[in-house]
Length: 68
Figure 1: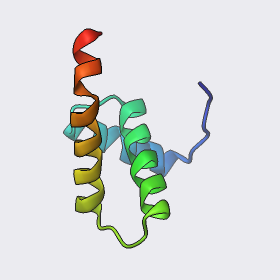
Figure 2 (figure 1 turned 135 degrees about the vertical axis):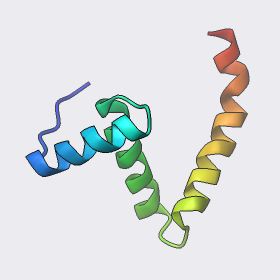
Figure 3 (figure 1 turned 45 degrees about the horizontal axis):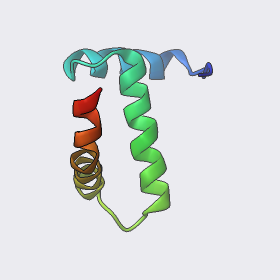
């Protein structure tokens, strides 16, 4: 785990959106970073297609989650 320095404006955006999405600030930042990483790796996919891809990956991993 590391520390990422971000500007005050972005931190405020994270705080606001994380509250609306019922996520911690760290979870919201991780979500945005993950989506951004996937968007860069898959420039032809829309946001909704990326989310569907993540959902499919989560479904494929769900048996492992049940064991936890």
